[in-house]
Amino acid sequence: MDIKLHKQATTTPKIRAEIQAAPSGITDSELARQYGVATATIQRWRYRDDVHDRSHTRHNLLATLTPEQEEVLIAAREFLRLGLDDLLVVAREFLNSRLSRSGLHRMLQRRD
Image (cartoon, rainbow, N blue to C red; front, side, top):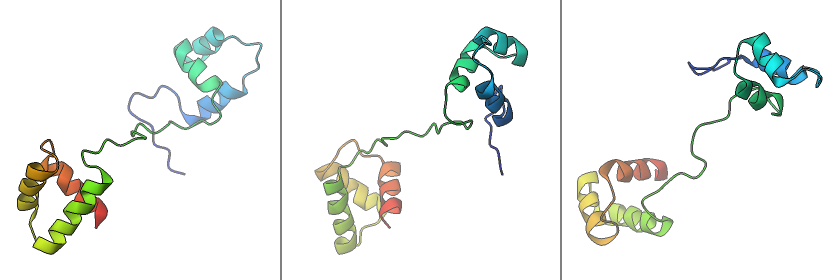
């Protein structure tokens, strides 16, 4: 199994499992001294259900365009056969003036 830890991780999944298995008679500060980590680290892992880091990716991705606007742009691209830069001019003029070129490109890649 491939374990991916970020560079600032102070514990491994094995240590996290040991923290979770520690008897309730041992205080968080005692465990922190034993493993050489902060008490906040002990509190984070002691009461969590798993031993793996959670994703840092946003759960609600921010999109500049609404789904309806995306449909209009897809149709315009297919009907008018516009390139990325030309489609961007049309999109900024008629749909969303804040749309970036990279945002439009990501949307087109996602929808292909």
